[in-house]
Image (cartoon, rainbow, N blue to C red; front, side):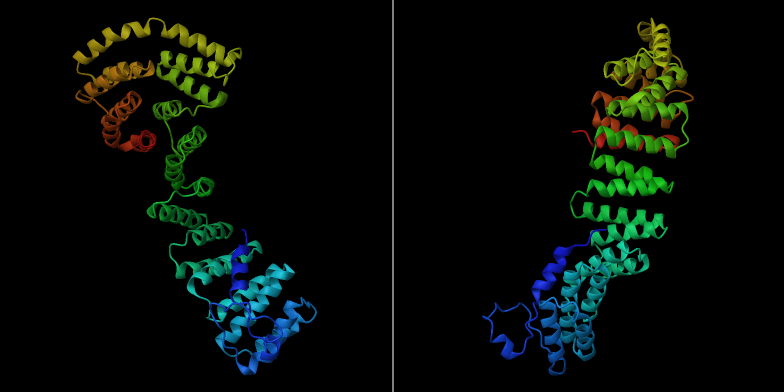
Length: 411
């Protein structure tokens, strides 16, 4: 974790210790009045001036003893703050992180630092302790920052990293979620890195939160690659049947997120197994055209030949089959024809048949509403698609949420 040296520079500049004895002060031009004047006690003045001189001269041999002497004499909060500030200046100059951490603690312990500056110092202290693998001390520093500002997202994120290092991934994920939520509540867009890190932590921990977080991520940053990662996370975290795999792969297709041989093979093979050769043929042709898959490879050439053979005459026969199915009372027969129309890209006709299936015996209403929502989404009916997808519950709820996320990214 990175130390914010800018914060330390501001601290060092804010009180450039105007504590020299009057005789020393007369030897220099008058400086601009500091925003805060420190009242150094007479008992500690001599030792603090000696420390100031050693620090300003970068007299590294004399500084440790001067710090000890000044601390021994410092009684008031102002005394302690100025000694801590000089200690910090020396530590920063020496590039000694352990000394910087100790000096920050001295400054904070003085009780003089205001709330805003204390938050920054606690965050810096947390970074130093974390870099030193002192995770309990780092966590305490970030928790102190959050006591002063419960919505300090930097402290949340850094504490999340510490919790992960402590072997507490669930707490780490919760802190990232809290930071993301705080940014959203403030009307600001969270950094993509936060989403990625939260998803990675949740995925590694095999947490169900990985699916929710990945949806939030792709909603905020809807790139094809992010869509692919989100869909893969959903598929990995779910026990999918072929139909559910197809519905999520159809989403990958809609989002332009199919990538590489594995994606095209899994999708086309699932379509063939479920009896949608026309759609499988179209998917393979898209992969060939994009040069994502090699038609000369036996795996794809054989699948394409089979899809071509099985789909011959299929499209032309659908109209008659649709009329017969709609006139009957079996929802499953209507669904088969509706799914075929969807596969050929005739989303309006597919939607009409899905609606018909809803009113027939044996209808799996969750699945029918999911497919209806998908067809309406592809046809551009955002309102209708949203209503249908929201009605898809049960085993279809999670993939429906993915499609709803996709809809939310469309104008």
